[in-house]
Image (tube, rainbow, N blue to C red; front, top):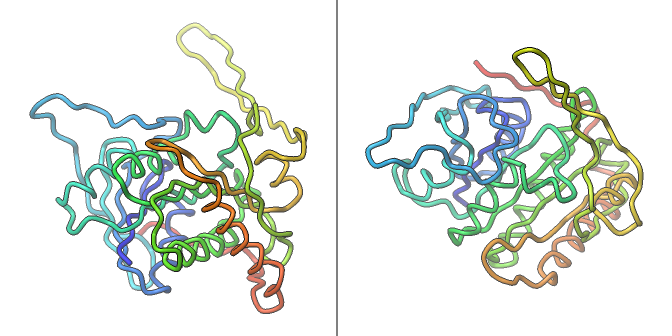
Length: 273
């Protein structure tokens, strides 16, 4: 399967490299295109669209085995999706994966997420897509999230590549500690709040964690109870939750019945060369 991998933290960031390695090991035809630097919070923005505008492009070798050449662009991740679909980097992808994000994308704040924005943009262009997120450093478990991502890709392939966009959030635990998977709806808040203070010539942002449960049914509640959260997003047309239910059943079966031979142990490592 030809897969576009992007993210909003910058090409070659740890979650990006770990997921790239898992996808390569699974035999997929992988192309990595993403922002040259941090673009979190960019939503579905694509940057400059003036006629004749140029977007800086740089090839970077990321530390997968074998090493993989990625493309870093001076634009948000949604523009990476547009570039991949346009054909300038080769054939159109069959699937777009955005992540692994450092920080869970849950609740209504996903409106601002560049990770989710890239997946939504792919769905608007008719390509199945996945946004996948783990927790913030130092607690993130990109290894567990990458393992889940591989299972999600398997489900898409086995299900005929449904044209849906799924937002997947993975708890920061060993694979063997996952309790299963739930189809969830968005919580009315995020797992953190943002506080701003004003100084003479700048605004300072501070992130405050909020780990409270909501009502037992949301994406936040699923994570707090060590469940994978799967939410269907509907950027273009009404999509039945039956598809997400099928994916959740697939993941729950995997992580409840096959845990004995799937524990990964300590987090994986990766870097940019």
